[in-house]
Amino acid sequence: MAGDSVLAVLLGLFDLMLFVADGFAEVPELPPWYVGIPVIIAMVTPLVFRRRSPLWSAYVVLVISIVHAALMLGIGSAAGLAMSIYSVVVYAGRRQGVVFVGAVVVASAVQLLIEQSGDILIAVLFLAFGIALCWTLGEFVGARRAYDVEVEARLHLLETERDQATRIAVAEERGRIARELHDVVAHAVSVMVVQADGASYAIRSNPELAQRALQTISETGRGALGELRALLDVLRNDRAEGEPRVPQPDAHAIADLAERMRAAGVPVTLESDELGDLPAGVSLAAYRIVQESLTNTLKHAGRGATASVRLHRTGDLVEVLVSDDGAGRLPQLMPAGRASPRLAVPGGNGLIGMRERAHVYGGTLEVGPAPGGGWQVRAALPVRLAQ
Image (cartoon, rainbow, N blue to C red):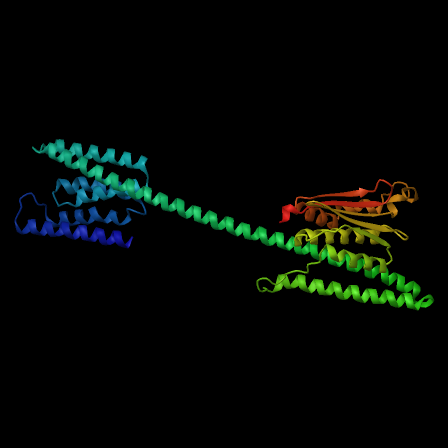
Protein backbone atom coordinates (compact mmCIF):
# COMPACT_ATOMS: atom_id res chain seq x y z
CA MET A 1 0.00 0.00 0.00
CA ALA A 2 2.92 2.38 0.62
CA GLY A 3 4.13 1.96 -2.97
CA ASP A 4 0.64 2.65 -4.35
CA SER A 5 0.43 5.76 -2.18
CA VAL A 6 3.73 7.06 -3.57
CA LEU A 7 2.56 6.31 -7.12
CA ALA A 8 -0.75 8.14 -6.57
CA VAL A 9 1.02 11.15 -5.07
CA LEU A 10 3.45 11.38 -7.99
CA LEU A 11 0.60 11.14 -10.53
CA GLY A 12 -1.39 13.79 -8.64
CA LEU A 13 1.61 16.14 -8.44
CA PHE A 14 2.20 15.77 -12.16
CA ASP A 15 -1.41 16.72 -12.93
CA LEU A 16 -1.21 19.62 -10.48
CA MET A 17 1.94 20.90 -12.20
CA LEU A 18 0.18 20.76 -15.56
CA PHE A 19 -2.84 22.49 -14.07
CA VAL A 20 -0.68 25.29 -12.61
CA ALA A 21 1.25 25.64 -15.87
CA ASP A 22 -2.00 25.93 -17.85
CA GLY A 23 -3.19 28.47 -15.29
CA PHE A 24 -0.15 30.65 -15.91
CA ALA A 25 -0.72 30.25 -19.65
CA GLU A 26 -4.31 31.36 -19.14
CA VAL A 27 -5.86 28.44 -21.04
CA PRO A 28 -9.51 29.42 -21.59
CA GLU A 29 -10.93 25.87 -21.08
CA LEU A 30 -9.22 25.52 -17.70
CA PRO A 31 -11.69 25.17 -14.77
CA PRO A 32 -11.24 27.24 -11.58
CA TRP A 33 -8.79 25.95 -9.04
CA TYR A 34 -11.45 25.04 -6.48
CA VAL A 35 -12.89 22.61 -9.07
CA GLY A 36 -9.73 21.31 -10.73
CA ILE A 37 -7.68 20.52 -7.64
CA PRO A 38 -10.40 18.43 -5.86
CA VAL A 39 -11.03 16.47 -9.10
CA ILE A 40 -7.31 15.72 -9.44
CA ILE A 41 -7.10 14.58 -5.81
CA ALA A 42 -10.27 12.47 -6.19
CA MET A 43 -8.83 10.96 -9.36
CA VAL A 44 -5.66 9.57 -7.76
CA THR A 45 -6.96 8.74 -4.28
CA PRO A 46 -8.70 5.41 -5.21
CA LEU A 47 -5.42 4.16 -6.72
CA VAL A 48 -4.05 3.83 -3.18
CA PHE A 49 -6.53 0.94 -2.61
CA ARG A 50 -6.17 -0.77 -5.99
CA ARG A 51 -4.59 -3.93 -4.47
CA ARG A 52 -6.86 -4.24 -1.44
CA SER A 53 -10.15 -3.45 -3.24
CA PRO A 54 -9.43 -3.64 -6.99
CA LEU A 55 -13.06 -3.54 -8.23
CA TRP A 56 -14.20 -0.73 -5.97
CA SER A 57 -11.12 1.34 -6.78
CA ALA A 58 -11.41 0.71 -10.53
CA TYR A 59 -15.05 1.77 -10.88
CA VAL A 60 -14.52 4.90 -8.76
CA VAL A 61 -11.58 5.81 -11.02
CA LEU A 62 -13.77 5.19 -14.10
CA VAL A 63 -16.49 7.55 -12.86
CA ILE A 64 -14.08 10.31 -11.85
CA SER A 65 -12.03 9.92 -15.04
CA ILE A 66 -15.05 11.03 -17.09
CA VAL A 67 -15.10 14.36 -15.23
CA HIS A 68 -11.30 14.56 -15.22
CA ALA A 69 -11.07 14.06 -18.99
CA ALA A 70 -13.96 16.43 -19.70
CA LEU A 71 -12.15 19.17 -17.76
CA MET A 72 -8.84 18.33 -19.53
CA LEU A 73 -6.86 18.21 -16.30
CA GLY A 74 -3.94 16.16 -17.61
CA ILE A 75 -3.00 12.52 -18.07
CA GLY A 76 -4.40 11.39 -14.73
CA SER A 77 -7.56 9.91 -16.22
CA ALA A 78 -5.72 7.82 -18.85
CA ALA A 79 -3.04 6.68 -16.38
CA GLY A 80 -5.65 5.90 -13.72
CA LEU A 81 -7.73 3.80 -16.11
CA ALA A 82 -4.63 1.93 -17.31
CA MET A 83 -3.61 1.10 -13.76
CA SER A 84 -7.18 0.07 -12.93
CA ILE A 85 -7.41 -2.34 -15.88
CA TYR A 86 -4.10 -3.90 -14.84
CA SER A 87 -5.18 -4.18 -11.18
CA VAL A 88 -8.55 -5.78 -11.97
CA VAL A 89 -6.94 -8.43 -14.22
CA VAL A 90 -4.25 -9.25 -11.66
CA TYR A 91 -6.17 -9.09 -8.38
CA ALA A 92 -9.80 -9.76 -9.39
CA GLY A 93 -9.56 -12.10 -12.39
CA ARG A 94 -10.25 -12.25 -16.11
CA ARG A 95 -14.02 -12.28 -15.81
CA GLN A 96 -14.15 -9.06 -13.81
CA GLY A 97 -11.47 -7.64 -16.11
CA VAL A 98 -13.61 -8.22 -19.23
CA VAL A 99 -16.59 -6.47 -17.59
CA PHE A 100 -14.47 -3.51 -16.54
CA VAL A 101 -12.82 -3.16 -19.96
CA GLY A 102 -16.30 -3.18 -21.51
CA ALA A 103 -17.33 -0.36 -19.19
CA VAL A 104 -14.20 1.61 -20.12
CA VAL A 105 -14.86 1.12 -23.85
CA VAL A 106 -18.47 2.27 -23.51
CA ALA A 107 -17.50 5.32 -21.44
CA SER A 108 -14.71 6.24 -23.88
CA ALA A 109 -16.99 5.81 -26.92
CA VAL A 110 -19.66 8.06 -25.39
CA GLN A 111 -17.03 10.66 -24.56
CA LEU A 112 -15.63 10.61 -28.12
CA LEU A 113 -19.11 10.99 -29.63
CA ILE A 114 -19.87 13.95 -27.37
CA GLU A 115 -16.60 15.75 -28.12
CA GLN A 116 -16.89 15.15 -31.90
CA SER A 117 -13.12 15.37 -32.19
CA GLY A 118 -11.49 15.12 -35.62
CA ASP A 119 -8.85 12.60 -34.57
CA ILE A 120 -11.28 9.88 -33.46
CA LEU A 121 -9.31 7.14 -35.26
CA ILE A 122 -6.11 8.03 -33.42
CA ALA A 123 -8.01 8.12 -30.11
CA VAL A 124 -9.52 4.66 -30.83
CA LEU A 125 -6.13 3.22 -31.73
CA PHE A 126 -4.56 4.73 -28.64
CA LEU A 127 -7.37 3.34 -26.49
CA ALA A 128 -7.08 -0.15 -28.02
CA PHE A 129 -3.31 -0.16 -27.66
CA GLY A 130 -3.51 0.98 -24.02
CA ILE A 131 -6.11 -1.65 -23.12
CA ALA A 132 -4.15 -4.42 -24.86
CA LEU A 133 -0.90 -3.40 -23.15
CA CYS A 134 -2.48 -3.23 -19.70
CA TRP A 135 -4.30 -6.53 -20.21
CA THR A 136 -1.11 -8.28 -21.34
CA LEU A 137 0.85 -7.00 -18.37
CA GLY A 138 -1.98 -8.01 -16.07
CA GLU A 139 -2.10 -11.52 -17.53
CA PHE A 140 1.66 -11.94 -17.16
CA VAL A 141 1.78 -10.72 -13.57
CA GLY A 142 -1.38 -12.62 -12.66
CA ALA A 143 0.05 -15.86 -14.04
CA ARG A 144 3.26 -15.23 -12.14
CA ARG A 145 1.35 -14.65 -8.90
CA ALA A 146 -0.71 -17.80 -9.47
CA TYR A 147 2.49 -19.77 -10.09
CA ASP A 148 4.03 -18.41 -6.88
CA VAL A 149 0.90 -19.32 -4.93
CA GLU A 150 0.95 -22.83 -6.39
CA VAL A 151 4.64 -23.29 -5.55
CA GLU A 152 4.04 -22.05 -2.01
CA ALA A 153 1.09 -24.43 -1.62
CA ARG A 154 3.19 -27.35 -2.86
CA LEU A 155 6.03 -26.46 -0.51
CA HIS A 156 3.56 -26.31 2.36
CA LEU A 157 2.17 -29.70 1.31
CA LEU A 158 5.66 -31.17 1.14
CA GLU A 159 6.46 -29.81 4.60
CA THR A 160 3.21 -31.28 5.91
CA GLU A 161 3.98 -34.66 4.33
CA ARG A 162 7.50 -34.56 5.74
CA ASP A 163 6.15 -33.81 9.22
CA GLN A 164 3.60 -36.61 8.89
CA ALA A 165 6.29 -39.03 7.72
CA THR A 166 8.42 -38.03 10.71
CA ARG A 167 5.52 -38.60 13.10
CA ILE A 168 4.78 -41.97 11.49
CA ALA A 169 8.44 -42.98 11.79
CA VAL A 170 8.48 -41.94 15.45
CA ALA A 171 5.26 -43.88 16.10
CA GLU A 172 6.69 -46.97 14.41
CA GLU A 173 9.90 -46.70 16.43
CA ARG A 174 7.95 -46.34 19.64
CA GLY A 175 5.83 -49.34 18.69
CA ARG A 176 8.97 -51.38 18.06
CA ILE A 177 10.44 -50.33 21.39
CA ALA A 178 7.14 -51.16 23.10
CA ARG A 179 7.27 -54.66 21.64
CA GLU A 180 10.87 -55.02 22.79
CA LEU A 181 9.89 -53.89 26.29
CA HIS A 182 6.97 -56.30 26.33
CA ASP A 183 9.16 -59.22 25.29
CA VAL A 184 11.83 -58.41 27.85
CA VAL A 185 9.49 -57.71 30.77
CA ALA A 186 7.03 -60.54 30.08
CA HIS A 187 9.76 -63.15 29.83
CA ALA A 188 11.74 -61.93 32.82
CA VAL A 189 8.73 -61.47 35.10
CA SER A 190 7.31 -64.88 34.17
CA VAL A 191 10.60 -66.59 34.98
CA MET A 192 10.95 -64.67 38.24
CA VAL A 193 7.38 -65.46 39.35
CA VAL A 194 7.77 -69.18 38.66
CA GLN A 195 11.14 -69.28 40.43
CA ALA A 196 9.77 -67.31 43.40
CA ASP A 197 6.88 -69.74 43.76
CA GLY A 198 9.26 -72.69 43.60
CA ALA A 199 11.59 -71.12 46.13
CA SER A 200 8.72 -70.47 48.55
CA TYR A 201 7.78 -74.17 48.47
CA ALA A 202 11.35 -75.48 48.71
CA ILE A 203 12.83 -72.99 51.16
CA ARG A 204 12.37 -75.38 54.12
CA SER A 205 12.42 -78.79 52.50
CA ASN A 206 15.16 -78.19 49.93
CA PRO A 207 17.26 -75.10 50.70
CA GLU A 208 19.70 -75.78 47.85
CA LEU A 209 16.87 -75.78 45.29
CA ALA A 210 15.51 -72.57 46.79
CA GLN A 211 18.96 -71.01 46.60
CA ARG A 212 19.28 -71.91 42.91
CA ALA A 213 15.83 -70.46 42.28
CA LEU A 214 16.78 -67.21 43.99
CA GLN A 215 20.02 -67.07 41.99
CA THR A 216 18.01 -67.53 38.78
CA ILE A 217 15.68 -64.72 39.88
CA SER A 218 18.66 -62.45 40.51
CA GLU A 219 20.32 -63.21 37.18
CA THR A 220 17.06 -62.84 35.24
CA GLY A 221 16.27 -59.54 36.96
CA ARG A 222 19.72 -58.11 36.29
CA GLY A 223 19.58 -59.16 32.64
CA ALA A 224 16.13 -57.64 32.21
CA LEU A 225 17.23 -54.39 33.87
CA GLY A 226 20.21 -54.18 31.56
CA GLU A 227 18.03 -54.59 28.49
CA LEU A 228 15.47 -52.10 29.81
CA ARG A 229 18.16 -49.50 30.45
CA ALA A 230 19.49 -49.92 26.92
CA LEU A 231 16.00 -49.62 25.44
CA LEU A 232 15.14 -46.54 27.50
CA ASP A 233 18.43 -44.94 26.46
CA VAL A 234 17.06 -44.97 22.92
CA LEU A 235 14.24 -42.70 24.07
CA ARG A 236 16.39 -40.41 26.18
CA ASN A 237 19.79 -40.05 24.54
CA ASP A 238 21.33 -39.74 21.13
CA ARG A 239 24.11 -42.23 20.44
CA ALA A 240 27.03 -41.97 18.12
CA GLU A 241 26.76 -43.44 14.66
CA GLY A 242 27.60 -47.12 14.48
CA GLU A 243 26.89 -47.72 18.17
CA PRO A 244 24.11 -50.27 18.70
CA ARG A 245 20.95 -48.57 19.88
CA VAL A 246 19.13 -51.58 21.35
CA PRO A 247 20.19 -54.95 22.73
CA GLN A 248 20.64 -57.34 19.84
CA PRO A 249 20.21 -60.95 20.90
CA ASP A 250 20.32 -63.29 17.95
CA ALA A 251 19.39 -66.82 17.02
CA HIS A 252 22.61 -68.15 18.57
CA ALA A 253 21.42 -66.86 21.97
CA ILE A 254 18.40 -69.18 21.86
CA ALA A 255 20.51 -71.88 23.52
CA ASP A 256 21.03 -69.64 26.55
CA LEU A 257 17.34 -68.80 26.51
CA ALA A 258 16.46 -72.52 26.58
CA GLU A 259 18.85 -73.04 29.46
CA ARG A 260 17.17 -70.26 31.45
CA MET A 261 13.78 -71.82 30.81
CA ARG A 262 15.05 -75.19 32.05
CA ALA A 263 16.25 -73.46 35.20
CA ALA A 264 12.78 -71.94 35.51
CA GLY A 265 11.24 -75.41 35.55
CA VAL A 266 10.22 -75.99 31.93
CA PRO A 267 12.20 -78.77 30.22
CA VAL A 268 13.14 -77.46 26.78
CA THR A 269 14.69 -79.48 23.97
CA LEU A 270 16.47 -77.53 21.27
CA GLU A 271 17.20 -78.73 17.76
CA SER A 272 18.96 -76.34 15.45
CA ASP A 273 20.45 -76.66 12.01
CA GLU A 274 23.48 -74.67 10.95
CA LEU A 275 21.88 -71.28 10.41
CA GLY A 276 24.92 -69.53 8.99
CA ASP A 277 25.18 -65.75 9.03
CA LEU A 278 21.67 -64.41 9.37
CA PRO A 279 20.83 -60.72 8.98
CA ALA A 280 20.56 -59.03 12.36
CA GLY A 281 16.84 -58.32 11.96
CA VAL A 282 15.91 -61.87 11.04
CA SER A 283 18.09 -63.29 13.80
CA LEU A 284 16.52 -60.94 16.37
CA ALA A 285 13.02 -61.80 15.13
CA ALA A 286 13.70 -65.54 15.52
CA TYR A 287 15.00 -64.99 19.05
CA ARG A 288 12.01 -62.87 20.10
CA ILE A 289 9.50 -65.33 18.62
CA VAL A 290 11.09 -68.20 20.56
CA GLN A 291 11.28 -66.08 23.69
CA GLU A 292 7.61 -65.08 23.55
CA SER A 293 6.51 -68.65 22.77
CA LEU A 294 8.43 -70.11 25.71
CA THR A 295 7.11 -67.34 27.95
CA ASN A 296 3.56 -68.32 27.02
CA THR A 297 4.43 -71.95 27.74
CA LEU A 298 5.73 -70.96 31.15
CA LYS A 299 2.59 -68.95 31.94
CA HIS A 300 -0.17 -71.09 30.42
CA ALA A 301 1.00 -74.68 29.84
CA GLY A 302 0.77 -75.75 33.49
CA ARG A 303 2.94 -77.97 35.61
CA GLY A 304 4.79 -80.81 34.02
CA ALA A 305 4.66 -79.34 30.53
CA THR A 306 7.66 -79.70 28.27
CA ALA A 307 8.61 -77.60 25.25
CA SER A 308 10.63 -78.15 22.12
CA VAL A 309 12.29 -75.61 19.86
CA ARG A 310 13.38 -76.40 16.33
CA LEU A 311 15.28 -74.05 14.01
CA HIS A 312 15.66 -75.19 10.44
CA ARG A 313 17.13 -73.34 7.47
CA THR A 314 16.46 -74.33 3.89
CA GLY A 315 18.20 -72.04 1.44
CA ASP A 316 16.86 -68.53 2.05
CA LEU A 317 14.13 -69.58 4.48
CA VAL A 318 14.44 -70.00 8.25
CA GLU A 319 11.68 -71.99 9.93
CA VAL A 320 11.03 -71.65 13.65
CA LEU A 321 8.80 -74.19 15.43
CA VAL A 322 8.06 -73.97 19.15
CA SER A 323 5.65 -76.48 20.62
CA ASP A 324 4.66 -77.76 24.03
CA ASP A 325 2.47 -80.50 25.50
CA GLY A 326 0.77 -78.30 28.05
CA ALA A 327 -2.85 -77.61 28.94
CA GLY A 328 -3.92 -77.65 25.32
CA ARG A 329 -3.83 -81.47 25.33
CA LEU A 330 -6.19 -81.77 28.33
CA PRO A 331 -9.46 -80.13 27.24
CA GLN A 332 -11.50 -82.73 29.09
CA LEU A 333 -10.25 -81.31 32.42
CA MET A 334 -11.65 -77.82 31.70
CA PRO A 335 -15.05 -77.01 33.25
CA ALA A 336 -17.95 -76.91 30.81
CA GLY A 337 -18.48 -73.54 29.14
CA ARG A 338 -15.05 -72.25 30.07
CA ALA A 339 -12.39 -71.55 27.48
CA SER A 340 -8.81 -72.63 27.83
CA PRO A 341 -6.48 -69.79 28.87
CA ARG A 342 -4.33 -70.68 25.89
CA LEU A 343 -7.13 -69.43 23.59
CA ALA A 344 -6.67 -65.93 24.98
CA VAL A 345 -3.12 -65.77 23.70
CA PRO A 346 -3.92 -64.82 20.05
CA GLY A 347 -5.38 -61.48 21.10
CA GLY A 348 -2.48 -60.48 23.31
CA ASN A 349 0.35 -58.09 22.65
CA GLY A 350 2.84 -60.94 22.50
CA LEU A 351 1.23 -62.54 19.48
CA ILE A 352 0.81 -59.16 17.83
CA GLY A 353 4.51 -58.50 18.28
CA MET A 354 5.47 -61.94 16.91
CA ARG A 355 3.20 -61.54 13.89
CA GLU A 356 4.54 -58.06 13.12
CA ARG A 357 8.13 -59.26 13.40
CA ALA A 358 7.41 -62.03 10.92
CA HIS A 359 5.54 -59.77 8.51
CA VAL A 360 8.30 -57.13 8.52
CA TYR A 361 10.55 -59.61 6.71
CA GLY A 362 7.83 -61.02 4.47
CA GLY A 363 7.36 -64.07 6.65
CA THR A 364 4.37 -65.90 8.07
CA LEU A 365 3.27 -66.89 11.56
CA GLU A 366 0.86 -69.66 12.60
CA VAL A 367 -0.28 -70.05 16.20
CA GLY A 368 -2.72 -72.63 17.54
CA PRO A 369 -3.25 -76.09 19.00
CA ALA A 370 -0.73 -78.69 17.87
CA PRO A 371 -2.07 -81.66 15.88
CA GLY A 372 -1.05 -84.16 18.58
CA GLY A 373 -2.13 -81.98 21.48
CA GLY A 374 -0.55 -79.02 23.18
CA TRP A 375 0.27 -75.70 21.57
CA GLN A 376 2.64 -74.63 18.82
CA VAL A 377 4.01 -71.55 17.12
CA ARG A 378 5.35 -71.89 13.59
CA ALA A 379 7.15 -69.01 11.84
CA ALA A 380 8.79 -68.82 8.43
CA LEU A 381 11.26 -65.97 7.88
CA PRO A 382 12.70 -65.34 4.40
CA VAL A 383 16.34 -64.38 4.69
CA ARG A 384 16.79 -62.80 1.26
CA LEU A 385 14.17 -60.11 1.92
CA ALA A 386 16.22 -58.69 4.76
CA GLN A 387 19.50 -58.49 2.90
